[in-house]
Length: 281
Image (cartoon, rainbow, N blue to C red; front, top):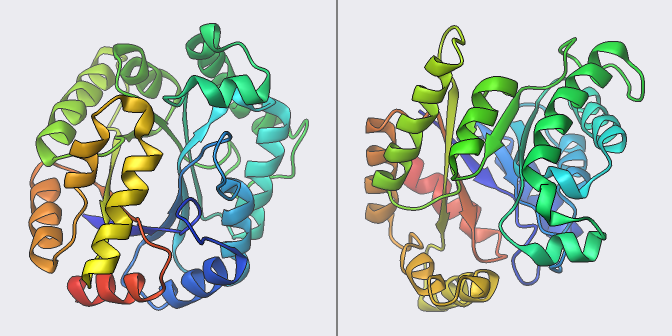
């Protein structure tokens, strides 16, 4: 199992200098990817712009969007942006798409959320067409565009991943939650009669080190997931705060067949990258 690390794009105090220093330091390993998440109605950095910045100071790790909220974006512009990041990075982009979990992102974008599932399905097909035809985008390194992942927890998300994408990205949580989702993703892949098997990506949160880091990480998660109406406490409790917790989490995800696990920082401090690298050895 490969292990990636998130870029600090949504945590309090995130900014350009930290992002560039973080990406440059991650270049030496042991991380296989640098990842971003997406919100519109939140003071976070735009994900594809952030990956483009990371591309400028790295050569090795893959650049993963896990995920971008597809339906709030114009498809032709998304195709151009993604292909540009892919071309600038030498073919390192992994583009994860989903419908997102919050309606306020759609309200800010002025997009009707009621058709978001069907809109995403059409978007996945249209992205491939635009990349293959070169209609509205520079040529990405793979002729049919960067690898696509689909996120989400409903039956339609698994079917969408099997029909239109290269794999599935789980939104996070304990290993047993990933195991259940991975089983559904594999079953949908078989139902769609796709050859091989889907790429399976997972995610988790971490804040390592002192009490201040742990408390700041928990506060960020409570705020970020406050829309869940109480479930944010369980998410904050799942924040990985010790080396042993990280190792147990990694071991369990690997046992459940995860191909790449991304650990997302909950604190905007460069020492968090160093601490996680030390845990991974």
